[in-house]
Length: 170
Ligand SMILES: NC(=O)c1ccc[n+]([C@@H]2O[C@H](COP(=O)([O-])OP(=O)(O)OC[C@H]3O[C@@H](n4cnc5c(N)ncnc54)[C@H](OP(=O)(O)O)[C@@H]3O)[C@@H](O)[C@H]2O)c1
Image (cartoon, rainbow, N blue to C red; front, side, top):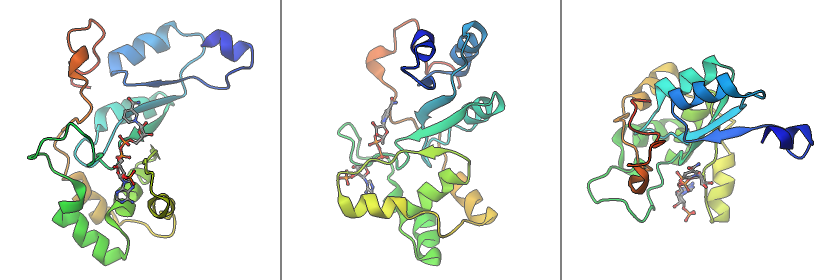
């Protein structure tokens, strides 16, 4: 990747699903530091410590599955979905914004990049409309309280690999 930057084929290097120790090892050994980390982040998995670590070393953070991907095929029936959360319903009603917009705004106010995915044109439009309102500190705290350290993308197929990233706390 560094050679690709040198050749001007790539502008910046980003990484995904690294844990803190792996990121530190990379930073120590890399000539060109990664500029962005893409990791799972949604109200049930706020990933606070890893976000703070990345931001402390000057990396931006991208939240993947920012809505908790309620449509994932491997979802079990007892796992929560953002659309059922009373706290989010309450904030959504108070703001006159959808639950999706409230959740995306929560991420943006944490200085995160968000990449919600939708194949539905009206939802794509809705998901961009998150810059005309803001959440109060109290509303932010209410959403923080939904965190359960519940990872939906744990990739169990890779858990015995020596570089499996998710055995560490973060
Ligand atoms: N780096 C990694 O390891 C990694 C892992 C997972 C995901 N990602 C990336 O992260 C991005 C998003 O992740 P994701 O697709 O897993 O999860 P997500 O964005 O949290 O959720 C996607 C689901 O939410 C629905 N949705 C989107 N906007 C909505 C709205 N306004 N109202 C109601 N439902 C809405 C979509 O439905 P419809 O499409 O039917 O509208 C889809 O079922 C993707 O680009 C993906 O490639 C990266």
